[in-house]
Amino acid sequence: MSPSEKDQILKRIEEGSARLAEYAGLAPETLSKPYAPGKWTGVQVLFHLAQTDTVLLYRFFKTVAEPGSPIVPFDQDRWVAEPDAASRPVRLSVELSLGARQVLAHCLRSLSDEVLARSGRHPERGELSALGIAKIAADHTLHHLEQLEAIRAGQPWKPK
Image (cartoon, rainbow, N blue to C red; front, side, top):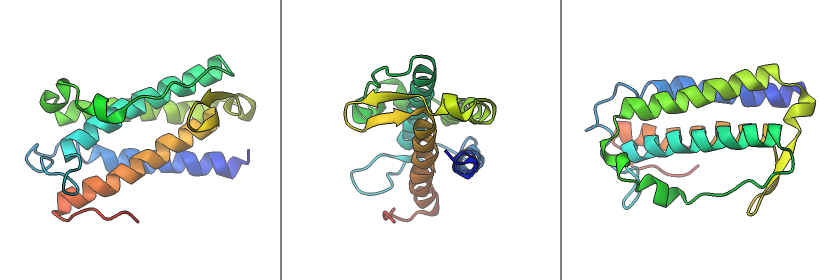
C-alpha cells in the first residue's frame, strides 16, 4: 500500500466528518424530506450513517485482530426501519458516526501498513483488508452527504 493511498483515505474520512458535523444542529423538519421520491429521509440517512460507521469500525477491528475472519453483512433497510430511527435525535446519530470516524482516523495514523493489510472475507464483496474497510467508510459517507446536501437545498438528489 502506498502512503498516498492511506493519506487519501484519511483525507476523505476527515472531509466527510467535517461536512457531517454540520448536520448535528439542523432542525428535524429540514431533514424530514426524502432525497428522492420513495427514498430515505435525511433523518434516516443520518441514522443509517451512524449504524454503518459503527458496523464498519467493528469490521475494521475484527479484521485487524482476527485476520481471515468472516465479515458478516447486514440488511441496511431493515436496520434503518428500527423503531428508534424515528425518535433518535439527529445530534446523537451524527455524534455516533463522528466518534466512530475519529477512532478509524486514529487507527489509520497509528497502525502499520502490515496491520492495515490484514483482511477478512465478505460473502458479497470478497476479501477486504482493514484499509479497504476504511476506504468503504470514507466513500460511503461522502456518497450519503451528497443526498443530505440535496435535501438541505430542497433539490432531488441525482447520482453522479
